[in-house]
Figure (cartoon, one colour):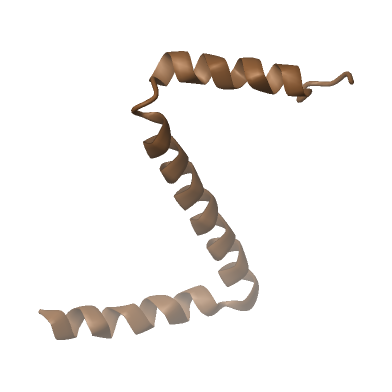
Length: 67
């Protein structure tokens, strides 16, 4: 199998990332990456139907009640 993302290449990339960041930092990196992707998807969905503005407006009154 030829190409940039063959299984052997992916193993080498993961090994280099493990060496650079260490095993303690990897869960944090994965968590941050997942959160970023989730926010991006929500923003894309919200941009299409305009619901992201509504969500922000709903959150603001709840924050005011807590104060």
